Length: 181
Image 1 (cartoon, rainbow, N blue to C red):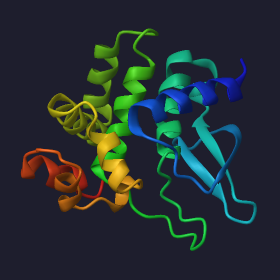
Image 2 (image 1 turned 120 degrees about the horizontal axis):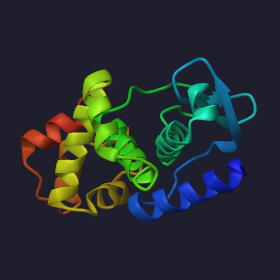
Image 3 (image 1 turned 135 degrees about the horizontal axis):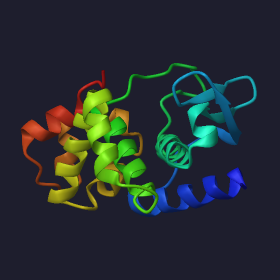
């Protein structure tokens, strides 16, 4: 399996859907370990690695789910390359990456089963996904519009939705902009 080619394909699709990558970090590969999936930043070199759980090594659905989720995060990384401050993610940030993961595995498995598993075992990701799904129902291009105002999802404010010309209920906006737990 050519990991770099898969990463390139996911990045292309994610950018088409959600806008360009805003990243001073250089992608330098994939690693597998016993931690949760995440982006691992190396401030001394400016590189980042997509870190996947060992389960993804031998499970095609897990591989694509985890990889696509982290690739989506690469569009708007949380670690500042200059200050090395890792900002907390918002519900919008995690919900969008989960939404993209479900899109990525659509042809590999029964997505409804995966959604049920999210609901049961990762309820916070499930709820974030549902909120992003609501946003997409209102305006499929909402994220791209928002990122044209502020490319980093974690920096969005309520007024940015208005500046982007979006008519999203204020309650939904508040939920999307809360810190993800």
